[in-house]
Amino acid sequence: MIGIELTPDEPIAAVADHAARAEAAGFDAVLASSHYNNRDPFLALGAVARATSEVHLGPAAANPYDTHPVKLASAVATLDEASDGRALLGIGAGDRATLSALGIEHDRPLRRVLESFRVARELWAGETVTHDGTFDVREAALNYDVGAGRAGESGGASGTDEVDEADRGGSIPVYVGAQGPHMLRMSGKHANGALVNASHPTDLEWSAARIAEGIEDRPAEYGEFDAAAFASVSVAEDGAEACEAARPPVAFIAGGAPAPVLDRHDVSAEAAGEIGAALESGNFSEAFEAVTPEMIEAFSIAGTPEAVEGKLEEVLEHVDSVVCGSPLGPEKSEAISLLGAVTDRVR
Image (cartoon, rainbow, N blue to C red; front, side):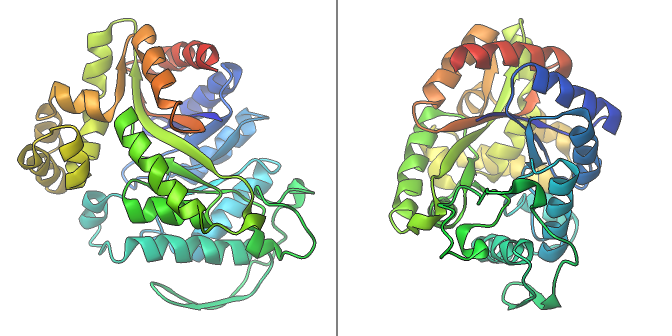
């Protein structure tokens, strides 16, 4: 899979136009970033569904803190119906700085994510769910059928009659946004795929080993696992402009990166901490200006089409798939066309 992330920071009609351009350029999936300060991702994805006919689509990655997991499961199921069975659920723990601005405690993220998509699978399978864990559910059910457009599909599972649909992983694929070792292992064991928050081959090689540890305990009926690099990509004919456009997403990545990741790239923990603190306090310009060239190299794939092509080839030595994430480039429409040509050559 070669996917692309679209940020709903433009009018929804523009997001849909970008999605149609991405489909025409050969992308297999269009994912919408999920942050409260942008437009609603599911309303944007509804427009994407109407503007496209083949690409898979879904949030990347929705978090089960600012939206109750049952509500999130229903939103994805509705998107699946609206897109004739093309939806996937990208789910992650969310950005600590963003959740802090909403007064939401980032509590037990691994358990929250795992419990959330387990409950979603049960709901999609038509079950009535009661759950007592990192969140509460009392006799919840969806009063509509999920996955009618996916006859014969099982979310990457074997499809044997002996395995309950919820145990197979449900009709809608689940991709876990992951970076740390425990979340990576969990995704390998329980999910259909991972959106690995990394852009550098060194990080992806390490991540692949952690996913493999989880796959060792993966039930056979879950089927194949799709490890996707969810990479911050910025491309332009002018490489310097592409690198400059990468500053905002790199700031969020560096500001939230754990110490082992920073150590792998000799990035100062103090500098990254200052960026994270600036983001949490809403001083975005200060945070973006503090991003160094070393951080851009470590946490993004940025440059000319030729440079991006070479880096994507290195990335795909360690993962099955890649999602080209924000910012794409200094000019989004042009970047989508450039990336379509680049990824076509990489395939």
